[in-house]
Image (tube, rainbow, N blue to C red; front, side, top):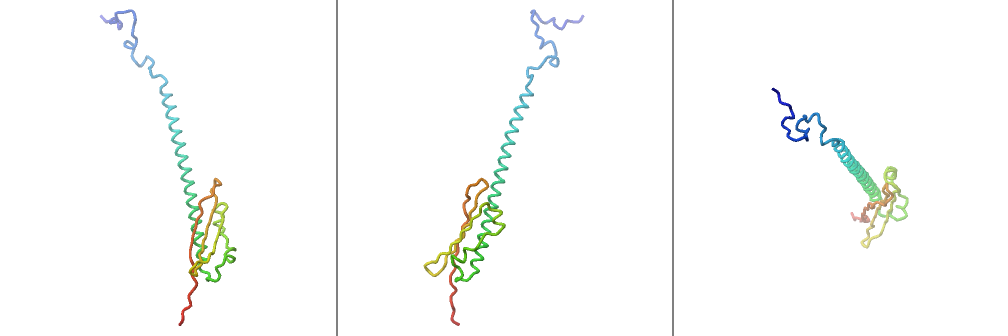
Amino acid sequence: MTRHPLSHVRSSIVDFRTVIPRTILPSRRCGTVVHEATIALVLASAILVTVVQVLALSAQQSRSQHQRLTASHEAGNLMEQLMARSWEQLTPEAVASIELSEMCQTTLRDAQLAIAVTPGSDGAKQLKIEIGWRHASGNQEAPVHLVAWKYPREETDQ
């Protein structure tokens, strides 16, 4: 004789979780997949925003480094041109006509060039080159400075 499946229950209250297999009854975790997916989506979005901000900052730093390198090269080139001149040709009036190259003007926003020729106490002339520009945000970048001294050529008796 076969036993009835509920014959072991002694009260009138039946606990269907023990009698009916778990595959038929709804789970207590109903809807947790949606919650987990929402949390995963929020975390992925936060990570994506952080990565985009880091990439933007990296691009800005790279652009700033490129601009500073361009200004340094331009200052070096201008100093070479000035040092190639004779000591007598290095006057404030003569260097006032010097301008930045086209490449420098296009790379550096609102680029400004300042060249100063100052006589020194020992007969030398001090040459100061300063190149300044504005950042894309409109803030003034720290300028590039280059300083050199030019001495008059000494006459040798031969």
